[in-house]
Length: 224
Image 1 (cartoon, rainbow, N blue to C red):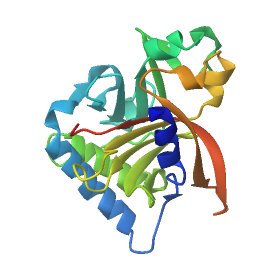
Image 2 (cartoon, rainbow, N blue to C red):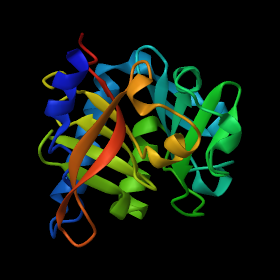
Image 3 (spheres, rainbow, N blue to C red):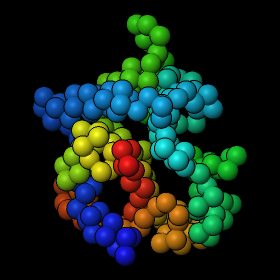
C-alpha cells in the first residue's frame, strides 16, 4: 500500500526546465544548494576516489558526487554512487551493466563528464564553490522541477539528482532518479529494490512535449 501511494505522488513531478533569460533557475539552484549544505553538514564529505565532494543520503545507500576539478576527474564530473546490494538482491548481474556504469567495492557509479576545464578558485575549493562552477560552466545540466519545487543536476542518460528549493519544508528533500533500462537489461526486478520505488512519471522531452516515462526513484526526507 505504501508503494502505491508513493507512485501516485510521483506522477507529474519531473517537469525539468532549464535556462531562462535572467537565469533565475541558475541563481536559485546555487542559493538552494548552499542552504542544503548548510542545513545538513553531516551529510557532506570529501570524496577522494572521485576527486570531489559528496552529499549522502542518511543511510549512505546513495550519494551525489561533484568534482573539484574537471581536468582531474578520474571518471565523471557529476555522478550518483549507489550501494549495489539492494539491486543485486533484486536480481542484478553486475557483469551485464553498461560499460559506463562502474561497479567497484560493492558500489555502482553513474554519471557524466561536463568538460575538461582546469577549475581555478580564488581561495581553497569548497563544496559550494565547486557546485557554482557547474552552474557557470555547464548551465544546461541545471534544471528546475516545477511540480516538486526541486532544482536538479542532469547526469545524462535519463539519470538525475534533485534537491528541494526549500530544504526542510519539503518531504522529498533530495531525490535520486535512475533510468531503469540498464537495470532491467541486467536482470533487476525494479519493483523489488529495497529503499527504491519504480514509477511512471511525467517529464518534458527536448521538444517541450509532456510524456510519461518509467524511473527508479529514491526520495529522502532529511527531517524524518
